[in-house]
Amino acid sequence: MNCKHFGSCGSCGLYELNYLEQLQQKEEKVSKLLAPFYTDTLELFDSPDSHYRARSEFRIWHEGERCDYAMGKMPLDGVREKGAISIEECPKVIDAIEKRMWKLLEKINASTEVLKKRLFAVEFLATTTDECLITMLYHRKLDDVWSEEAKILESELQCKVMGRSRKQKVILSDEFVTEKLKIDGKTVTYVQYESGFTQPNPTVNVKMIEWAIKQAKTIGYGDFLEAYCGLGNFTLPLSYYFDKVLATEISKNSIHAALENCALNGVNNITFARLSSEEMTEALNGVREFTRLKDIDLNSYNFSTVLVDPPRAGLDEASIGLISKIENIIYISCNPETLARDLEILTQTHEVLEAALYDQFPHTSHVESGVFLKKK
Image (cartoon, rainbow, N blue to C red; front, side):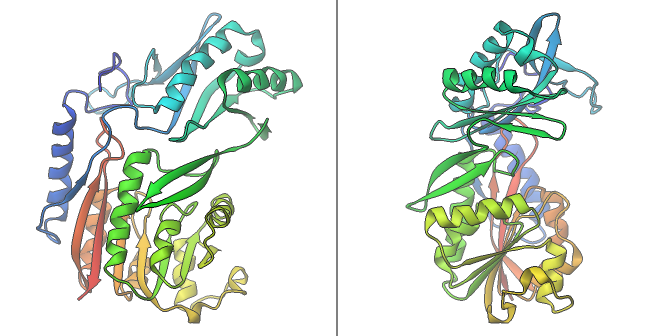
């Protein structure tokens, strides 16, 4: 990927390396961190070099009567600079975003004050099937005149448009897109809401899920436990390989989307519970009862496998203690440092059989990884 803003835009930091060199650098970093626990070669899952990101947010920079997209500045000597730079291209966004974002900017600049006044950011959520949801964020209350102008944008850009301001959300048609991904020979449908978390790189997301499925296929028995399940990204495709599934998530909106996605895919062996990872641990260890679980018989589950996909901070000690009791562990990580830290404890009871690297974020130092552990 080439971009005229390399070196000034803070969004991409590895612009001086070609993509293969970037991937090699990330492999070396993760391999070194995992070396005390896994000495075989990492399985690498690369990304398209450009047009890979299905979710992006851009600031709006006002200069006189004109609006431009803007991104934060490249850090100088490791220190983030204040301010932003205007951008004229962003080759990392998928085609569904790219073909609309510049037309949108033209429409904003050609409009009256209705669309541009106190507009401070635009968010894009798109799918591989060309659906796109555009959310326009304002520092002012939106009225019917704005809705009328935005409705014209929906028609001209063939997309969905939403408006947000403080304590206000204006939905003109829908607040979601519907993604269809081919995963392990099956088509899985996901409703993805504007306010919910989604994996940003659809191509690598499929590879990551299929890697987890490959591990699940080696097990072939028992029930499946998942923490941090989100909208069911892993839950739905992995549910086919287990008897029953219990998946937990703290976000109400994500649970709502997950239930909707179960119905869309005709999956009926998953039970979703709105619990944090700490609450899940307390519930399954019998430490605390939750009214949210009054209709769920936790004792009926025979968990053979657990999947965790925690935030950058990794797992808390209690959660590590809980999953250490389960035969098979699939650990997906967005921070190899905390993964290595957690493995110091997990490998006291389990051994790492497989490890992988998923390059969700080309041209940045961020890297996702995964390990499959089995009880010793």
